[in-house]
Amino acid sequence: MVRVNENYTLLQGSYLFSEVAKRVRMYQEKHPEKKIIRLGIGDVTQPLVPSVIRAFQQGVEEMARKETFRGYGPEQGYEFLREAIARVDFQERGISVSPDEIFISTGAKEDTANFQELFDTKISLAIPDPVYPVYVDSNVMAGRAGKLSHGRYTRFVYLDATLENDFKPALPKKRVDVVYLCFPNNPTGQVLTKEELKQWVEYAHRYGSLLLFDAAYEAFVEDPSIPKSIYEIDGAREVAVEFRSLSKTAGFTGTRCAYTIVPKEIKVRTKKGHTLSLHSLWFRRQSTKFNGVSYPVQRAAAAVFTPEGQKEIREVLNYYKENARRIRDAIVSLGLPCTGGVHSPYIWFKTPMDSWRFFDYLLENIQVVGTPGIGFGKNGDGYFRLSAFGDQSNVLEAIERLKTLSW
Ligand code: MLT
Image (cartoon, rainbow, N blue to C red):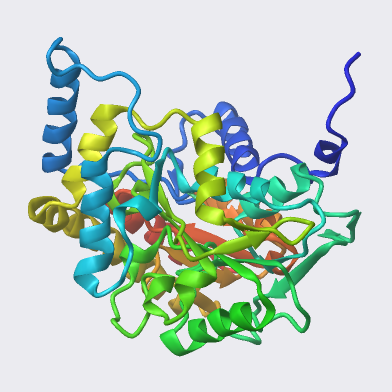
């Protein structure tokens, strides 16, 4: 028999959202008559907007004709899409990012999971707790985690996000090589001000660290004093990679299209001290292991950045934001301390029992599915996350059902 990658044996249980789906499936099989409302995984429910659909269809039409058919695309993604992103997401907002610093991909999940491959297995890592589990698991698989002890890996530096610090982790006390940050945060929904994010950029400069900044939820930010991009902070281009996605911004969870920005200034070094460009390394990695997003999907994605596309996605985003506001109000009225729901599609709250018990309690009593906080890390125990991506009528029904609870 073939020997496995031993690191996989260090992973905890199954992937969070697979476990949630399994429990819901089992419940539904036992109770086929019950209507379950799913506010667990952050999966969108509203269709792609009309201008995106039209561009998607045109892309498919082009693939059907010999004169316009396309095979493999450029490794980093089509220029038309990268230019549109650079202009609309960054340059028009006074942020310097050029199209050749943008890498189109099938998802921020993939990119945040894959990016660690560029680094030595011995580097030190700071990972928030609670956290999107992909950052943790991908580093465990790569052999960077050490041993599992009391629910934590011995080699990670954990950045505690708790009620006490308003879910804004403090800077690590010592130097770490790579820091994972996600704002607006998944799962807590918390955001940082420019001043707060600046401290992370300064930390990275002081210690020669790299920040991996997940901005997948930037479209939910409404207040201009809250950065949507880490590149709004001076000096970030030298120390930060940013991950963005159309999944939550424009309903692409099933269609798949995301992008990662790797500024050309970022340098990394070899053991012997030779300096390399991180951008060149990521280009090398992607061109070897990835063959791009399909042409029709990139055409559809480009339509998001047209004035019409922007107007249409804003309407859908407002729909989800209204859901978020209502869920947050309902949780507040239940007297449960919570964060998120503003500038974020996630509402994170303290539960009157442990996370999985609360999950089962909601499923059995009111058939509402959320995500147990413990699945995002040790600090998540006793917390729960609800997502605002549901259909509005379902969200309203879930709120009514929540109001019937007592403990
Ligand atoms: C979540 O629910 O945390 C996200 O939908 C997961 C993801 O984007 O992969």
